[in-house]
Structure formats: structure tokens, C-alpha cells
Image (cartoon, rainbow, N blue to C red; front, side, top):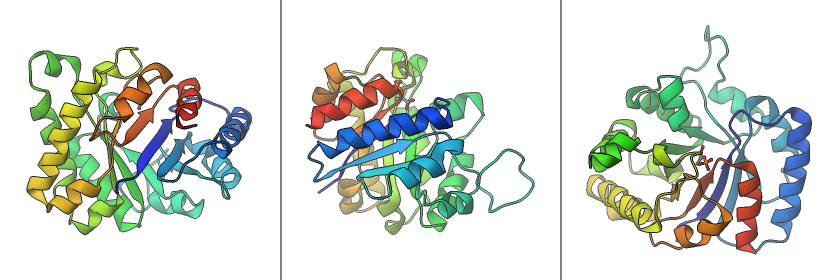
Length: 249
Ligand code: PEP
């Protein structure tokens, strides 16, 4: 059975002090939730990862990074390596978020390298993909998503996929308040699962969790998450993450 996952991308929000408060609150909430098959992952900024990781050591919350460099080490000012993350017990990394693609020029080819480095270090990858509004309007969305998945991930072995989580995030729905309908999310998730099934054996496609991200809120979380091929959500709004967790109570 696939894991259900609720993941929170904190983006560039929260100071060290604020992180302690928020993590404490989330830990309290998670305590009261039945989470047998559900994973809760938070991705605070780099400066707060170690604290969050220490605080959540004995609870259901896992900590992920929002990005990582593809090189092992070296002259890459301002960057963070897989080894650095692992040294503070961060075992999961979000790669290919649309904000990284758009503002930092991250391409599918670069992301393939980042994915390789993360997996080579035994890390788990949350690989984000999704179309912009023009692609959706012109009916190009399946083609764009197919390319993001193929170029970023289809060089992997079946075994590598045990450490891959997918996150479909239509760019037009991120932080805009506009959400893909549950049907639109299901349609894309089923399309992606079929793509994976065609490239690999169907077991790989069946076991990979595909999250939806894009203005998930308490009012729509339940309906979206209940779709057959939607295995949870990647949520950017922090208050919304707190309130969506309550949906699992
Ligand atoms: C995100 O940034 O991954 C995201 C889904 O943001 P939001 O929930 O704010 O749309």
C-alpha cells in the first residue's frame, strides 16, 4: 500500500525562534492524530533544519530540505550538499520546486543530476513538477509534465524509485488561491502513474506516492486527498498545513 504523505514547504519563512514555536505546535497536533499510514514531513529553511530535526527526533514528524546542490563539495558559494544534510539527519530533499525552476533557472537536466546525487547518498527525493497557466490553457500540460518526469527521472533504475516521491504542483495554483479541481488533480496523477508504469514495471508505478500541491486548504484537502491517485499533499501555506493536519483527526 502506498504511503499517504502531508508535507509542508516552509519556503523562505520563519526565523530560528519562530521555527521552534511552529514545530512545537505541529508536534502537539500530530500527537492527537491517527497516522498509521500517513507520513508528516516539514521542510523549513536551511538555517532551521538542524533544530527542527532535533526537536522531532522522537515524533512522527520528518524533516526535509527544500533544495540541495548536485556536487559533493567544493567552490559553490551559498550552496548546501547532501553530506551536510545527512550530517544533521535530514534524509529527504525537495527538488524541482517551481520556484527553483522559475527564479533560479533549474532545468530538468540539472534536476536529474541533483536527483542522482541525493539518491547516491541514500536520501529520499520529493520531485516536483507541474505546468504553467499558458500550458494548461493551450492544452500542453500533459506534454510539459511528461518532459519534466522523463528528463528528470527516467534514467533511474526501478530500485531507485523506492526513494522517490512525486509532487504535482500546477504552477498556476501555487500560492494563488486557485486550486486544481479534484478531477484535474486525479487526471494528471493517473497520467503520471501510467507514464511510470509504461517505463518501468507496474509495481514501481503502484508504489510511488504522488502528492498534489497548489493552494490546498482545509476546505478542499479532504476531497483532493480522497482521489484514487492522490496520495497526499505538498502544502506551502504554513497556517494551512496546521489546519489541514486536523483533517486527519
Ligand atoms: C508549494 O509551494 O509547494 C505550494 C503548494 O504552495 P501553496 O500551498 O501555497 O500553493
